[in-house]
View 1 (cartoon, rainbow, N blue to C red):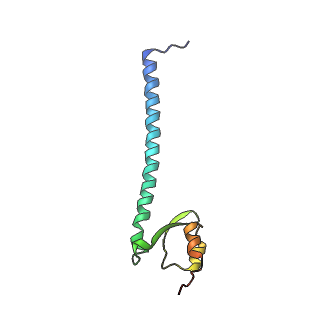
View 2 (cartoon, one colour):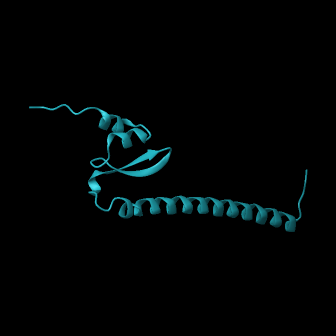
View 3 (tube, rainbow, N blue to C red):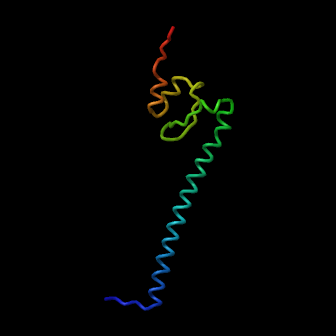
Length: 99
């Protein structure tokens, strides 16, 4: 059985607490970076699609990166460049003319 003096025990507890705090700081920095990237992405609407109606904008992915798409103003070739999802597949289907 290993016995630690009171001082050694306190040092071990302090070291464990310090490591826990350092891990929490790393985690919070990572979360902060993610939130900053999200904020910058949402702010980019005003630069990239200032003439679009917000209701028509969608977040889509191209090569795994988030981009804004105006579903009214984009053409078929541009849609084909995007990562596929159900909504894009639906947009690519020909529209039937009903009379």
